[in-house]
Image (tube, rainbow over all chains, first blue to last red; front, side, top):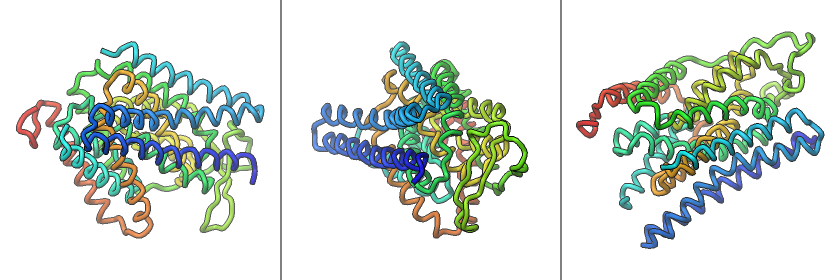
Length: 98
Length: 283
């Protein structure tokens, strides 16, 4: 298995498992809500939604670590730039919150 | 939020995503108009909920393509700079763009999707591989099962591809969709990637693009877990089911049915731009 394939396998595992874990957290939250634990259920479902949103960010982080370790500075830089743009977007969301 | 409404959201998302999956389409393009037209959900809430399901479906579907070595992760990260910048611009505009404009834009994207669905995609013309490449670090090969060997390919016109990707990110953030409708022409026509590679790489990129706007909408308090939760769950399960059926179903008739549905939704979105909702008798 070459090194790039190793990265692809790592990313596949992260995205696959991460999606189902996040979905299970959302399902647990919604189930809690249906059982009458409204506030707790909403909080758990929000955590699940947050996990889904965090998953692609973790994917870029994994790629950054891989490219950095391999000395591929240009691609590492691109990963860092994408992360900076996402963080800027989230900060913008916080600043413009009503 | 009633239990029956949450169940309705789950079933509708599952159905839209499963049918979309059969045709290799993301479900966001159906979910947003359905939530608005049939669920009387506000457009901003619908967009924010849809963006979560778009991320979930992208992440859930990406694994298979990665394992098959169809995804070009280097092209993806280069183009993601443009798509996330587009999404950031969309986040800036979201809330300022008049709602009627969003409906008109949505109608235009639905019409474009219908046109693309009727048109068969073909592999772009690859240039001679013996000539020097402008972006050698992005060139790669993919395994072709029919040929039984790896097929090399070369990347073309990155600046044009990046420009189109910026637009795709902007539209994704504004409308809560994956923007495959813009990403696919960018990758097929501008970059001239083989179809399998462009489909896999586009799907891989959708999650990061949508995360840039999804994170902002979550921070802004626009994501309602009782709406986004059932939509995301239904979409992920539906996409997994749709992908399994994809291999076994002849999709010509289904494709035509979807074109009709897309046209009807486009018509409804146009009416909505002028304050008319046929399902609820008013805006």
